[in-house]
Length: 434
Picture: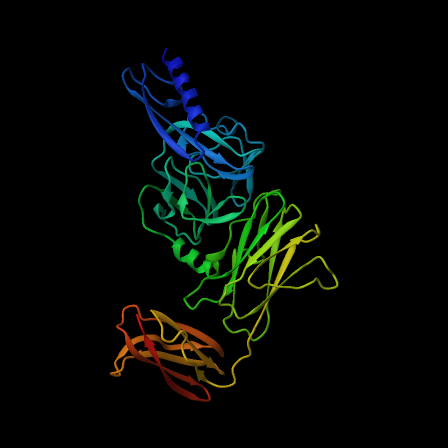
């Protein structure tokens, strides 16, 4: 009688899964008499804690994991509709017939669907990780990536998932899998609380100010890559490193440096070139761009298809192009200065002026120099230090001044620049009107 009851409940839960498009986990307690197969319960009057996770998968390739503790970890039991093997990663891709908690796997499906997995809740999991890249799994409930705690090692990348292309993720969702890079071998503790190991919000804010290129092959996949000016803050190129290229047959696009984003110097004395490498792309490819409005550089795009020199497309504003030639495996970007290096020091009038609450101050530097830029009120009192003995290469620069915390009135901004050949000092007036 108990087995019949459980089977009926299971069928009911499957129906619920099919009609619920999002990932969810529900818990149900069933009274049972005696031991149950799969280790879910034992004892005369104990209650069975049965959870169901409905994992949404896309057509083609997905990165997936086992979000519950189950009685049968065979891939054919957990993901019976997958049309490929399950590929794990151990420095290279390996086939796994039996899955496990805490690990991630590549699997392919013929149609979008929800896969129901039954088991007991997985509240925490300690995952052994190797130095470099790892595919990790999930818990039975969504957690922020900040709740993933490194033990005896350090996280050196963002967390990436795959949804028609690699994407930075701020959450670990049930049933999904994620790439993360470690500096040494150790463990990762997945739990419901923890300290942040990497600021996804800061990264996404940085990328939002970059030029954006979206590459869409004909099979509906998509990868976004970014190009921007060198950041003023301390910057490590490894922040933009992507996980390993997926197994053959899965679309991928990335810079040749293996990054999702590249940067070029704030002052370009000569052209800077970058290449984007395509893998397993289905043609034609639709490539669109959205250029940052503050950019003063000339950026051109070309393909590797034409041996005599491919046609260059100037990237401005928003636009797109279709690539039909199936021989194209690399896209080239060239960044050139859109403005000549200044010949004299200069401090320009801020814009806008009057302003509320912020304005931009522009200055020219003909030589490498150390810059100090400060703001004063009418009494000559310093109210803000924008730059303090900061080194700049020759070029034209803009610095934002935010007066949100200051009262209305007239202010002065003063620059002091010292190069090997000259000292330059100048000041100008501006008005804050709220």
